[in-house]
Image (tube, rainbow, N blue to C red):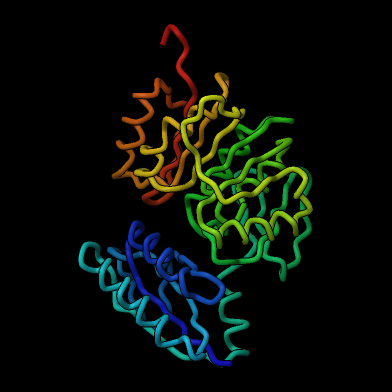
Length: 301
């Protein structure tokens, strides 16, 4: 069966929204690529340096799914700068190789390696290898926010610690944390597709006893379970909104890692964390994206 490739250029914030829209209907999920070197005959659009790419099966559902994606692109284009939606048809055998070329072995931080299952890689001393297949969930290592979070996990995961991962997506942070030494991770997501993808990746990694994946979010509770580490690779607005609940699950000496934060939206997280009496202890930036690390303030701070 042939497939239809969809591609559109956008800025960082729009790329995130477009990928979410594509994931509703795309076959195998969406890929966000950063265009560094344009293809021959193309030009680099500095205002829209990302390409969101996805595929639709050419079956009886094609037109309905394509119209849904076109409506989402039109709606976003009313408020954000996005390019034209480009399409082309590929034979099934071409598609099988086409989408794989966007995935490669990625080195993140000092010792984390992300590897698609079809590629061979021999780990070096002290490296951890996360094996993932791309699915319809956020978090393959192709996006800066995922890389930023993994690099911070290398610094803040301690042997035997317990972690809460909110918005787990593909489960990549949960898997990385356990491979770095965490004893247990409670991985949550409200998207059923993400939950299914994370469960598969956790099972493939042989870590089902150490990682519990559930369709859930966080809320303020009377007797919350607390963790040494809380991660939320979502959006700045959502982190700010959920801050009281997220931090209620953080032990007094624990560390919170938040990402998915555009530089221009960082003030939302800063304000919310200030209200919760949290202190920023580290930040890192890649392109327009930030990761922000917090701990509870001491009595004299």
